[in-house]
Image (cartoon, rainbow, N blue to C red; front, side, top):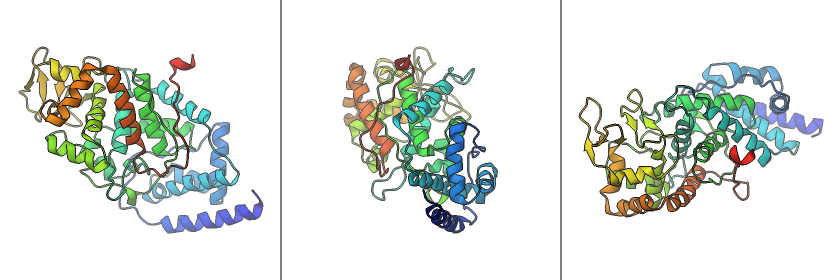
Length: 368
């Protein structure tokens, strides 16, 4: 890129930053990454800093805790992306595979957290970041990654996801060129695949947004509601009843936490392995209302160790939901196929992709 072109890019970017220099109406929920250190990281950070007219400003944006700096953070990353485009740089599939691999490594470094894996909480982050899409207004979804901002980060449905965002910030520090939306959704892909689930087609192209892009509360499922609510939530995103039931299968992984959602316990006996057990247990076990001081949830009558939410149990009660849930209980391959298709679509809702066909990322085992 010529010096004159760089000067024009610098002037344009500074003008954009001045427009953004106003107090944010929402705080930033995760700590921005520190100044990059690796050699490749230095290249990306240097490009962004050059576009902004100095590395000192770039460091201020990354390190400062002020609303001003956090709002400007997206502009810094946008400037870096513009600079990379100007020098004809585009991350390759191999670059994204490295990000995938790092996420997969972090997943298993969970120690005593939950059931020994961060995979379920990373899947939940990807699901909730994407599940805010509204097809009528074409707002929400994984583009802009607005759960970084309050009050969206503080919505009741997102309780506990600061854990996942913090883990993703570790990866972001190693690969600062990736957008948060691409990072979080790639984390969901890694979670499903590394825990034994199907391949999830994925492609990059999301950009970082601003606090003003954050979505209102109420777009994610409310676990206390019935079938009508579930249908409304998924229809708002453009999903059919069949796709809704398939996406509910993400509850094969993880557990609820009393100190987060108020609910407590795992859905299955293997909460770190992706299976169709969620559906088989719904129909094979007898479920009774749990007698306790928490919100209404069901527990299995036999062991009293599993739980189902009211929105889970409606899959056995609603006629349209039930036929799909029973099909997935009877056929694991069918569930894997339909979940892969529905989840891949969920991750892409509202994203104006420039990339062509989605990729299939290789699991760690496939790379041995």
